[in-house]
Amino acid sequence: MFSHLPSLQLLLLNSNSFTIIRDDAFAGLFHLEYLFIEGNKIETISRNAFRGLRDLTHLSLANNHIKALPRDVFSDLDSLIELDLRGNKFECDCKAKWLYLWLKMTNSTVFDVLCSGPPEYQEKKLNDVTSFDYECTTTDFVVHQTLPYQSVSVDTFNSKNDVYVAIAQPSMENCMVLEWDHIEMNFRSYDNITGQSIVGCKAILIDDQVFVVVAQLFGGSHIYKYDESWTKFVKFQDIEVSRISKPNDIELFQIDDETFFVIADSSKAGLSTVYKWNSKGFYSYQSLHEWFRDTDAEFVDIDGKSHLILSSRSQVPIILQWNKSSKKFVPHGDIPNMEDVLAVKSFRMHNTLYLSLTRFIGDSRVMRWNSKQFVEIQALPSRGAMTLQPFSFKDNHYLALGSDYTFSQIYQWDKEKQLFKKFKEIYVQAPRSFTAVSTDRRDFFFASSFKGKTKIFEHIIVDLSL
Image (cartoon, rainbow, N blue to C red; front, side):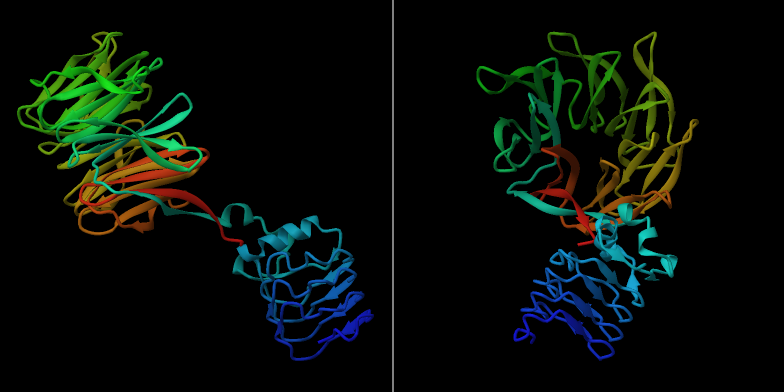
């Protein structure tokens, strides 16, 4: 348009009806110093509208209808001394974040940019907006990797600066151990422990030794140990069949520097049992109670004291407390009015203790410890739910509610409302567990599937100002 005027230094385009300035609108005007486009109806300016104007010293876009400017629209204006953006309708939302940062860094004189919206910033200066830091990022979960097999539980452990994942696969009769590949940036097969109807694989690290407790529905349960010379897991010991007949959950914990694990047994004849490490192996230490068909065990530190919470198909969750003199768990109470709880998980947010209680029928619950008892703070509709798993990445706290009947739902903690709000739906067939895994400054969670493929989602930060 102006290429035949290469020596032009001043250009006035005031009081016209322009609505848009397109890329390279002033191509060829290499010596332009003053550009005034005032009193038009400009709403849109393309990212490269001012490309090549390296000698421009004064630019006025005053009194137009501009609500937002594309990121780095002024990046070519090396000589800019003065910029006038007055009389426009700037929305001081996340799309203006780059401009806010540019105004703080530029050596040019810029007349005050006033906000037209959002309402809370109306007539305020863009320079005074303070919410960009925390309001202009959000998070998302995207599929990173799909594993072509079914699974019911996932556990993660670190050994010698590497991250591993143990996946129970009952249909393939495997406990598959994966390793994070730092070069390919995905999880790859590392070892495979075979068994019969494996329902749980739980890693235990003691000194430099790595053990995996493999819970099976048939043929007894076993403990495997990583053998350095064979670079694989080899059988270390059996777990007494007489006590554990239908394992449903394995929970690892430490008390006074001693290592224990508990297996929750869900058969009528089974006994939920605590096992203890004695430097040579694990031996049965305490049977917790009979005939209760326990579905889950959760170790919880409540006000500095060690507790186990056992959930059951046949009664409300019971709380056992560790007795320091007898060194055994003793009954301490229950969580009333909570029948048919499949699983209890504990988590902390801002130094406060919470529980999530999974229920297949009725609503699942979130409860908070108030220094005397657990009180309900939220009910989540959960028909068909087999798992309600809390997990956190930095300051983002989530609950994953897995459903057999519909999409699984991820909830995110809302600090202001002090409740979990719906965040994202994901599709996983018959999910049985959700497990957070972090490696190489990246955050993932594994969604096991009893009927479909196991999925690995990555937790990503999304910049809304882009």
